[in-house]
Length: 220
Image 1 (cartoon, rainbow, N blue to C red):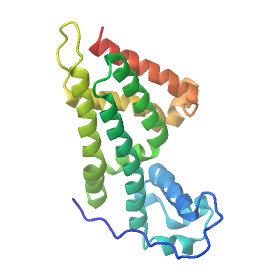
Image 2 (image 1 turned 180 degrees about the vertical axis):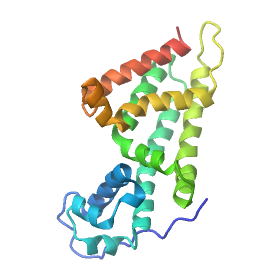
Image 3 (image 1 turned 90 degrees about the horizontal axis):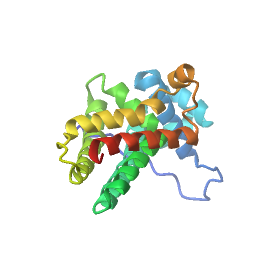
């Protein structure tokens, strides 16, 4: 694994900031949004500062470079996502088939609904090779696929009516693609189908659709 840059500097001690959210969180959120929309090369510290509503020197105080900020953003987002994936995998063990399917559909859509920025970054970096692409592969993509494969093993354990085992290497990309596509391609979805994929109602409908697909594969 490519070694990542040093961690961001700690803020100085003293009176806590009255900002809500704190400036460093606004910086990370703005960076995540711009990295996903414009790519690493197309994103500037100036642009991040403008979107975050902070001065450029404040970003340089917390992060020595754009690269260090990128790694910080990826670490924070991937840590939250992987924690939830593992929690879901653990919770799914021993549950009735219908509950596992309902949980998987709901969790997958919520991941895509909340973390579509990180999915866009992965798509962008996957087109090239280099330290950032390697880092994403090792700290996020492979661990995510391993967790997803473990869930497929659980589903294969509840197969009914003599159905053939479904290979994880086919189901995982197909299902993850179906879960994330509408949210990563928001503009195209809204322009083509006239639906607001940012609406929770759409997320609930998409969850029900994916659950029906899983039922047809594993239970019916």
